[in-house]
Length: 407
Image 1 (cartoon, rainbow, N blue to C red):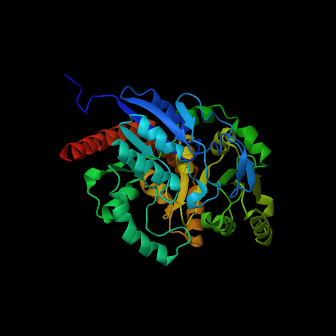
Image 2 (image 1 turned 120 degrees about the vertical axis):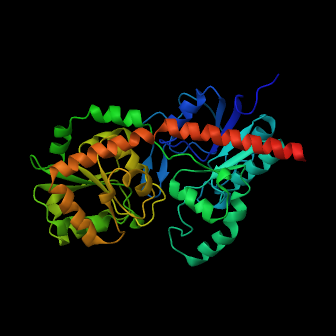
Image 3 (image 1 turned 180 degrees about the vertical axis):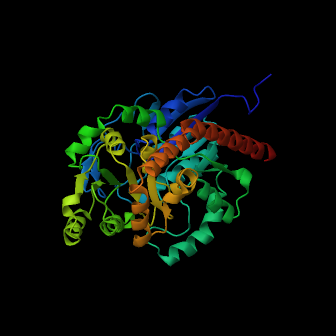
């Protein structure tokens, strides 16, 4: 007698645009999962190989293992590599999927790329279950163009019904799918996670005093941190202005990250008269970040567009509490359950200044926030992500086989 769908081992192919430092640890765990025979198909090796990151304005190669511990293959890209529909076109995906006898395809390539549709068509021809989703929490795009909202209202209900199971990384994403008319049994929350154990272990080894001395932090002072690309939609200037208005004694502001606003922020800090209390660290590679988080007292993310923000995960694992705008996706899932007082209205500089004064003038309150942030991560980890993903695969395979039998 054969196995039921509930207990069998699934042959799964994950299709990804390129190696990502957040996903590699998850892929390693999935490769060792008893219910999965797991492989990854990469459409490029950007990130594992040095390449120009337009937003950082620098050549980036992540300095943590991205390709170790799981089976992977690179599918040659016939496209230009540009951020466009045909910039990522990997015809070899079709052959791999049709001939691979996969039970399910997990697609992490966006539908705005040709390779998504190559993978989708091949999965249908092979009768493999096809799972995909989005990290979006709203129909409003980053550039806020109204015509895109209108198009999404028409397109997305039809688009996501193509999935045998929709996978989304946040509870706000689940709510968005419901608003589009998708039934609850077609949507699975697969939490957006990082390797919690790695971040906590790295943070525990940090010489906090030494790092803070290197930043010129005052003895027994406090450090406010911004850790993200210096892009307009991240609104780093909001934090700079709020920091100046809060006028906190023995406190410095550290910007970790690079981007087009760097020079503007330096000039603004000088204009505000706080240049001597602001530090710019530039681009920080992955292995450097635990020391940055562990040496700060509060991370602030004022973004106006942020579908999730894994910096919240990272900092929280390092026991650095996070204040974020109400436009940050992780605010609902990670910050509100632990520290609801650390969420502020996007663009409200006065509210952010008051928040800084409230928390940074009370070290007991700050210490409690740090403990709460760290504790929240115990229930938002790779364990929850993989368990949910395996369940989504089971449901998708069941649906695909049921529809195949009906035909």
